Image (cartoon, rainbow, N blue to C red):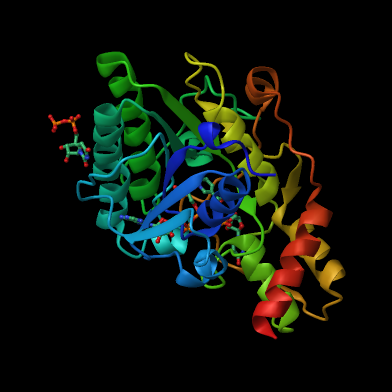
Length: 318
Ligand code: NAD
Ligand code: UDP
Ligand code: UDP
């Protein structure tokens, strides 16, 4: 049900035409807020917003966050940044600019408006982690000069900027370290493991396991993640994070492939391909901070989330 008008906020979502951003916008509109989506459509698509155009509380603005932005808002979610290795390595300089210049501009905007700002950071700030599971106090193991660095170091620098604006200018910041998230509207060509495996399984192509497939990831369904972001934004003043948001149930990529083959009823076989450089061997969030500070725990098991995602891609391919 829409909230009363006096609790309606004008919320800016950068990167709102992308996978996570479009789901976040759906939820914010359901709550009765007004949403301004700012996106340069690098990896996002108009299709993700198609269902919103008749909504008078939704507005789209095509804009690159590396350039200054003068708008009005009560809250800012800063999600703009390509997220998959294939996309962020396509133009690595632009990726770093998006994280760093984009953060400066959105922080400058939040400073002028005196509003809360949330940063979509990432588990990649932990790099190839030497401790397991990863807690927020871990400083990470990141290669500063490798092919993933434009993303990892860009996101680390964005976190630095968020905390410096907080300390230096008293800005109300919220930093979420998001772990692998999946669901409908993932870009079919972004090369991420869940979308790759589902598309391969549905089209009867071999499932491409990079390396031996024993590396692990923990997959969070998008609806759970959106809950976490909204709870973080609403958390008490003074709680800045960083806070891990992800599903702590860990799978090997081989297990994921087998689960997807079984859920799709596919005849695809598994093949091994070379492991990309600097590919983290294991990743699993410690979510005790999110549980105690936000009362947040993901509730959707991988098998259920995969069913929704497979259904989406079936429609997309069919
Ligand atoms: P996505 O690629 O689907 O969405 C990113 C959006 O940002 C796209 O719509 C893209 O067009 C837009 N964008 C990119 N550069 C921009 C720029 N310079 N100016 C304006 N818009 C720009 O990715 P996603 O999975 O939805 O990720 C959203 C955010 O969450 C990203 O910041 C990403 O780093 C973070 N994140 C995602 C995951 C995940 O598993 N999906 C994990 C960790 C962090
Ligand atoms: N900025 C913006 N929108 C605003 C206010 C600022 O895009 O409403 C950008 C502007 O480009 C500026 C940057 O945010 O360079 C950082 O702003 P800040 O006030 O921190 O620093 P300034 O560079 O203005 O001293
Ligand atoms: N991966 C894979 N086959 C693919 C795509 C990815 O085995 O077709 C592996 C990849 O090497 C990594 C894991 O799956 O170990 C997750 O990759 P993704 O690109 O989805 O995300 P990230 O590495 O950023 O966690």
